[in-house]
Image: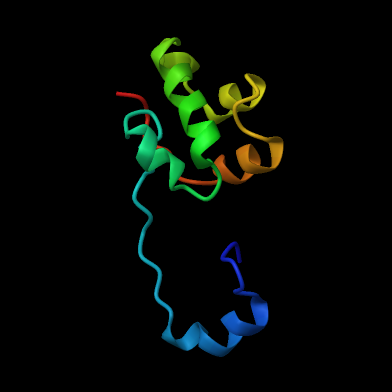
Length: 90
């Protein structure tokens, strides 16, 4: 229920028409800064921080929790993003 202006009541009215496919992993550790900025939990400011973080840390440190501890993501957004399917660093 994390869609702007789309609450439980609207969902209940439309749920017969909604199908959900298996989510594709979000490639946070490899996509461009501009693409990261479009994510609703990231935005322009944090996308720049993520790029700097991934360029300056080894793959084993690339975690959503690491972004949260570094102050790149607000706690609320880090918690929501941690529920997403994240592709491992390549």
